[in-house]
Image (cartoon, rainbow, N blue to C red; front, side, top):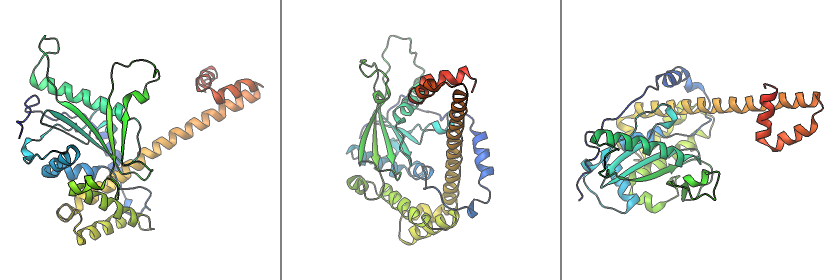
Length: 316
């Protein structure tokens, strides 16, 4: 067994305020039990499962890397608890055997995950260097744990069992020999996918089963709270995530309800942004028609940059 990496010894989780967003979520959750289901179980339970059970987290690491580490105390958890924005909060991060593993759960496909991981990685390295009290301006090379970035995807959009997302896919000038690259391994953990991985990590397999069972209950007409209650009860009776659901039933239900509601808020904000964009385009179209600028209107439809120029011209 390799010795524990000492670079980030006594690493303290850094926190920044997200109270405003969470206060909204707390207010918005009122009477949630009377609402109809519109969303899947989301990522907070995933983090709860593996953050609470270090043996399960070590098992997940071994399953991903083909290793056989046995001592959970060797895991040095360095998860970013919160950043400037709630959406930039890291799910799970830990150091083991010179590797910095960054794990994220996603219930919606997100092509921007490499950029997010780049931000997480910069935050992690900065804190590790600060904790080690090493100067970046010194001549001695600073040794850093090698990053491993993994997304666990369980959305309903079709996705392969495994996919590599690259930071360079987002670069505008793809002909340029870029100075940086970051690769993210995205794994489909919906029930029925990645069977070998599931066999090696039983908590991950049971989580996939729980999500699938929850979806089945939530596809009906039951209010969200009742649907999740039924799913939890079914899983307890059938030994799925038994200890977690039995010992933390109320806590699990509460976090699922909160995640459901926060996600609904985020979707509402996105939809408002889309609607506002449509309204701006409509106002611009009306102005151009009134001024008989049909060629400008045709160009604006095909050229987003020109459309922005017209927005500024007419202060739309």
